[in-house]
Amino acid sequence: MAASSPPSRVESLSKPVQQLVVDGEEVLEKYIYRTADDGPIDISFPVMEVPIIDLGLLFTSSSSSPAEEAELGKLRSALSSWGCFQQ
Image 1 (cartoon, rainbow, N blue to C red):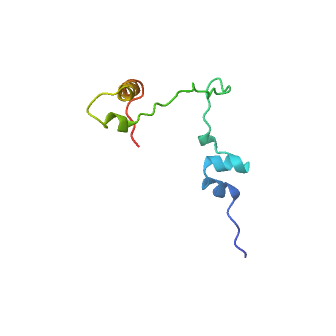
Image 2: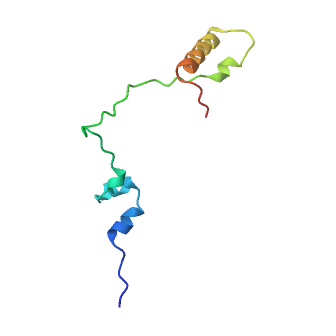
Image 3: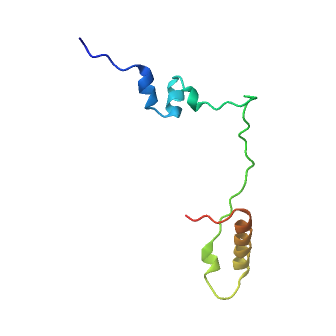
């Protein structure tokens, strides 16, 4: 007797949900989030400009230049509104 291949449902369990959608396969119910209204979800976010601080300007000299003061102001504003991120 020839070995039978596993059902496609087993194959779909090993794929990410995004791949199931791309392939047009059925997504398991446990991955579908439903709410009371089930209307369209508004995923629009306000456009926010991420501040970029040139730390080199803050450490270049002991005297305060206008460019250094401007960067210091940007740093103060960024830390108070965004917090601290490092890369």
